[in-house]
Image 1 (tube, one colour):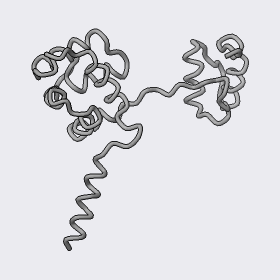
Image 2 (cartoon, one colour):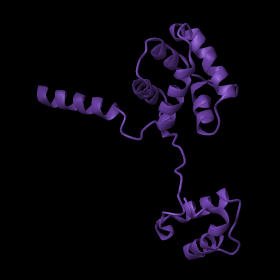
Image 3 (cartoon, helix red, strand yellow):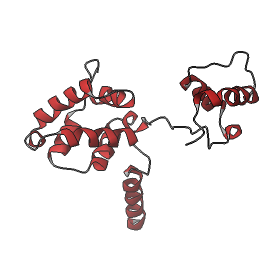
Image 4 (cartoon, one colour):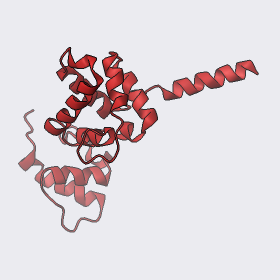
Length: 169
């Protein structure tokens, strides 16, 4: 019975650990923020929280802005868990561990992911999803009028590729 309990508790501990690629927005945003903190600010949780709100106003865009919203660093945030960030930072806890703790409080924080960049020169277009093909066209500020099939999107991208992509890279 004791072996079962030990095995179960070990399994629970391992399931809380971050896997490669987990919490990428959380980790990058906190690393960026922490690198901008002064040594005196790092010791005060109040200063860390105020600096984080300023960081969110000045620097955060896109996924980082969404992270700020979840944390309570954005003016429009309904709630906040900034103390879950400021205390561990003041203790010099590693960023990955801070994100693990934040994940326990709000799983949405680790659900944030950066959009993957697609290299049209090297990718096999027929292996992409239609959603990704549409994203390529959208990034080029193009559209595919009358496209119904995946092959229509691929043909449109191939037709426009010379206009939007440098092939000498």
